[in-house]
Image (cartoon, rainbow, N blue to C red; front, side):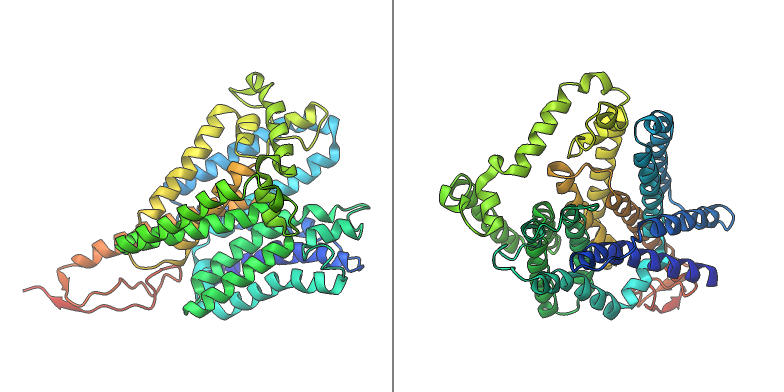
Length: 450
């Protein structure tokens, strides 16, 4: 028990460093202060937690579901592809290999941390702490843009302000970090929303996130957040059998989308707007980032046949054009071939389908995983390569959610006839020795069978 609590505390420390400190660092540098990067520290700590988790699952009979093993096997396969390519990549760019080693250490670490059942129980029991960290994380960009000044000139976009004040020059390109910051804001918001008890709190969290995402300036993060929130809202209404409310909500969303498609996209007046969201939406396919991603995709499709079957890891670097990898889920096709691509897409859809179908007591990690799968799922379709850190964090959380669901069903079945005793006032099954039990704290009573 103590070993499990110690590992969970260690994992929570890593999450603080990864989700908060890494992103805070570049914003502190924008204010003119030199801060050492915690990236390599996080990579080493993730390596340690991965080793500890593997020991837990092997030497101490830790429970890893078949689905969890399948996901882990896929991650190991992707890592093996990288390892096989290391000799060739070292000849091209040694720095790239070193960075990728750190990336894979974090990938494995985040996957095992998300698998930690006691972590989700601890988060559920420390709602105020999560809320405090959420406010700190989402409020920092607001404070930074105010301190830097000239916010109005950049239309209150930190991304624009970075380039306006020429702060992106030098050794680090701070303008790139807005993407990961936006993604992490969205994922942390999902956790905060699920832990809020009142509707007023949820509305405040939702509005603060919209403001923070607008200031950070990540278009894809804002799109993914709105998409995941809307779909999750519709699913919840449908599962609660509110058919009329579901139809009305769906109709409102469709009307808004149709109006935007016909009256906003392509509208020259909106394309000149100071609001970057309205400007980008009005530009449609002619928006700068959309065009650049489209050009990269077309260029990579011309040579896809040569790597279609088995893929070619870091082919863009090998061809002398680093950074030109496909910016969507087709990156898996480019790097790992058709089999790796098909497995990843099938796995993602299967996990989402399995979790959405769940009907039972509310479990934090289940709802969080649905939102995360929806959020990152739309991102890998339009703007992300799919092989980033948050992919493995989301897969680990989804595997933990499925395990929570199945453990709950087993307990429910066992409770129906626990050794000749029939429950009469059964609420939820209780296992006081299991800190990761989603039914922890609930009680039941039994009447002996006649």
